[in-house]
Image (cartoon, rainbow, N blue to C red; front, side, top):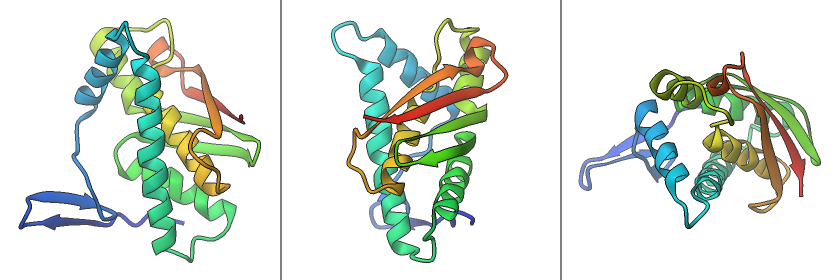
Length: 173
């Protein structure tokens, strides 16, 4: 099942909306600069904040989408929409497998966040896909009707570290 990209421009307020929510599009270079800034915070866990915000925003977006599209009912269709949404919004390619209420396995054969980091600043010693981790947690929580913070996502392989793909595992907490 495909994600139907619903956008509108509010001329009176000069705002682009995607799925009824105000949105600003940034290129992958801007997004990796945000990540670099979040990593530099010494007094707060900027990366955790980045991941939690991504979870919250993407959970809300998918929930609204599914309410508007009741024809997307079963697990397979919901996952298909989530994968297509990730691609359509320009984040890369993502594939969910072994999805269940207790967790999932996910790969990103293409991650614009990881590819751009590697291109701009070279190889990392740790994974860089904090936004994608939040996206995944938000998707799984929507699919199984769980509140924010119900899932932990760990990234084991990352393109920014020189790996072929980004690989994630999800577990319910």
